[in-house]
Length: 277
Image (cartoon, rainbow, N blue to C red; front, top):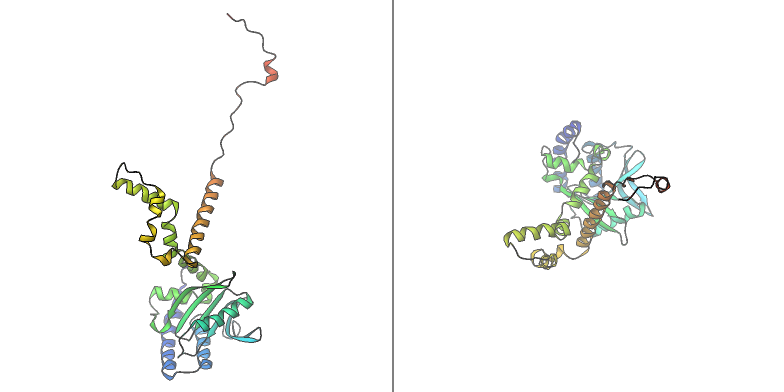
């Protein structure tokens, strides 16, 4: 994660606890969606650091309907926010609505929140459109002085945008998950390591890569071997291996060309005859 500036930490430690009290009171009163949007707007300004009047757009028109909030910095929309009433549990229908907004506008980052629960998604612009949950947190459960919780809040901070914090975090969670770990275990380099270690246990025994591969369904859970997430992870590992192989080939020194050891053929014709004894 990118280092969080001190002024951001100070802002979070000062403002987040105050909004936790505001959110808890609003939850106890079961306020409506409109009031929840107002609280979220204030949160974006006072905790996340955006200018309330120039960088937070409400009721953004998208194809005949309206997205609750959009964060716009430097003339560019950075992410969309779909807000639900604080008493509602976020569900797949809410996500589908938010994804529809992002997909229509070509905006990959969307946030779904009811004020307390926050879910950050990245849209995959593929066929069909899909999403990836990058981070989620309950603001009421966070500690403003905990570095891990500060990291989560920093993902949505204005200063985090300039440091690509959310992209860096996405790269990490995309690599460090059970599907990628399972794909790595099944890759040729790791199978080679397993084969060598098994030979240490049974010296002189011949062990084929295929024999190791055949055991994976008994060792790994089925959901990390099959399905879209598993296939995506396998492609990711293969792509990285291919890129590494290309880079290695590119950096490999070219074989030196052998220098001629004699003169030219034309010069040989001019050499005097030698007497053979």
